[in-house]
Length: 322
Image (cartoon, rainbow, N blue to C red; front, side):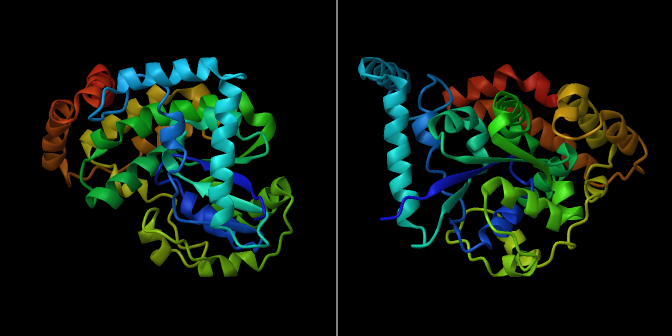
């Protein structure tokens, strides 16, 4: 069976990764499926927190790490085993002539550094999006525009921090692009990515990506139905979602938490974003339901499993931003 090289897209959820995935997979040399989630348990099992299970996960982590320490090459042997395992499965679902398998799993932001370390022959694409567009899309997609940000605390805070750290540590072997660049100049963006992947580029990709079939039910099913051309997205849509007083205050504090330096690293200017937020016209829609949603967010740590609960409780003040 032909061995394929892996491509990984690292991004937060609702950052346009499915759109990018389809554009890349329009090349016949790239195979993919919707979202494998394959590697999460093999690398996220190393910490002793963050996972809830009927068995004692703390004991499991201690035993696993102890076992890895007695391997001849310790962590290198563990990574090689995962690499062979994943390579076999990636090859199994790839076409015979495929050169790459593209794994797009948004919560790989939790293990991005581990993946880059374990796959020295891999290709790694970091996709950034205006953080307020991501917030808006999370609310619109999974709550019809109502408050649900307590459920995505891991992505908005830890996920973003992890991705920036992974990019800074490995940017000599990776490529970075913003969603806005991808939308505004799709042809040039994909040509640059094809050059990085050493794949032939054809402008026909811009039309053929709509025919890419992503097997599986995970991923952006709304986007698969909605986006059949590269001009169908509205980049300023977040301004219509985040413009009541509560959301406006929250997003200003979120942007300040990210900070000027980190925003610059991912391609955005803090002053431009703050000016855009301040210039938004106020709409009182969802104000009452947002207050109730924030109250639910305060209760959320108490209705989740103990291991996850402690992580959210430790950061609830940062989540609230008031």
